[in-house]
Amino acid sequence: TADVRQGHRFEILPHQAYDAIRLSSGMIPAIPWLYHGSLALRENGPSRATWRQLRARAQWRFVDINLRDPWWNQELLTEVIQGSSILKCNMEELEQIIRTYELSPASTLREAMQMVARHFDVQAVLLTRGAAGAAYGDGANFYEAEAVSTAVQDTVGAGDAFAAGWLWSLFHGDAIPRRLQRAGELAAAICASSGAMPDQPEFYRTIMARWTKED
Image (tube, rainbow, N blue to C red; front, side, top):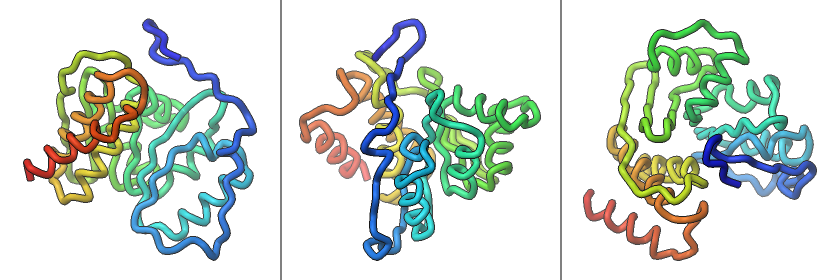
């Protein structure tokens, strides 16, 4: 549910279906990219065991963490983030990670992102900042992008849309600045509609067709 003053409130119940995802190891092929969050891994049960099998078969991992109290702890966070290819988080989550692991204060955003990347041996950090835009940092590069202007209905689903736009752009061979731009465009489009996922496939087809034409 939305809270105008404090963003969103989430009522997350224990022992849900996504806590018991099972998959036979014989069904798991080699995986180029594994995209996952952390909420479904909150219980050290079937879903986490399945994730470990998938992780072992993945060449790259895109981790979109979800720090929803009380459904995370330092042990889980370490296992989920460690060695990932891309860690996506928002500003609040980045600050929470720095506090949790008692990392040294950073004087710039770039330093903070690089510090987290080094601590977890992560290749890159992708940061969403709401109205302040987004940033990307790896060992050699740092990019920032302004937020795409839009008439906001609500922000539910914006983070997932940002990740989807980034990955679409990555898979189409775009440079990092273009990936940030397109991720921001899709997130803004979601913010301009009510709910996390428009139920009309044409919504997505129109955006992808425009991007393809631009290429």
